[in-house]
Length: 431
Image 1 (cartoon, rainbow, N blue to C red):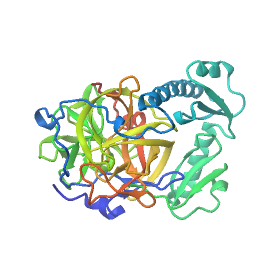
Image 2 (cartoon, rainbow, N blue to C red):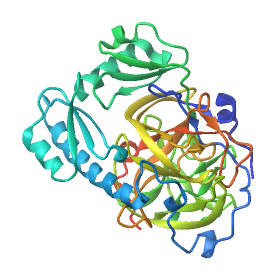
Image 3 (cartoon, helix red, strand yellow):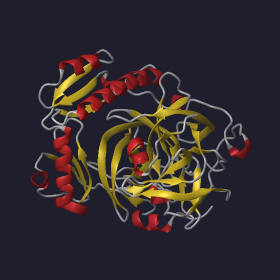
Image 4 (cartoon, rainbow, N blue to C red):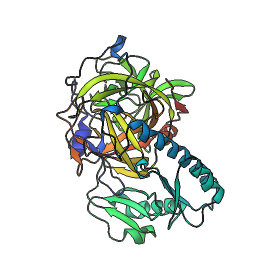
């Protein structure tokens, strides 16, 4: 295997740093090119693909007192359905008091934040789906978006992340060493967290159609990344990954040297790119033991795309760290400053609730998934790995390459819908 991408290693001590709102930003998770460690043997199809399916979430502890992940995910799915309906309706009205939604299943109810009085019909519809609590907000989502843009213009690279709080109380802002006068510059209350930095974040012998969560190599630099979900672009299936992994016209190959395709579309603003190879509707996953070692590898069907809400539990599937779950969304709709890369918007911040590895170097571009409650062998596409907070939340690495990398329990990923929009993709490939 080749060495990690040199720029990534220089920029963040093995991971490129990204700034995140109100928390330490993660570095980009691309840039490792070490051979995988000992993965337990699994039935394989031609090209190295695992021939079986499996439930990877069952090997991780269930939070919040739920009897099973299915019970938690069923409630979360109902919450997300209601949250998506509320958000869609609220965004149609320019004068809407909508501020945000928290869909944390461990609270047992959807929390909707609204400035002023929320429409009774909207609340009633939500309550017909899931227990719903409407809470007062100081600012609307539109007001906070305006304030965030104002602060970015005024503070520039002094902030690493900025975005609206889901409760409408103000902005979440991440900085390296503090920011005096942030509230004055934004015109709204600001929650500032110091010491926030972000850096960029493959499996190892895939074949077409290429699945999400496989290893790929930048043939120009030798840097390693992970494939994302298969997507449609111009009616043709392609492979999604992270823009910081390669420049345009670079040839992407798997670790055995087999060509996947050329990078044909790249958007720094969403940290997504398109590899012109045939994308499939499945993702690699694996079960793990208590130490995060790979026990068995399999594949899972992608059944659609779903936006993740604050409070949701998601899983990541990078080729280096392997599948990681018990990761909860803390904020969304963030813009983060990635050192030596640029500003990336449409980002979601999430943290491992067990303070173990969420993602790490080499996992950049890999899938972020929501497990289908009705069938845990299926997943929803919800994002693409971008960065980790390697400064404040570094932790032991897991999976296929547990040594020689940097990993963290706080991560950032690009929302699947904004990520696809950034590269002109119309939807995910279904399995």
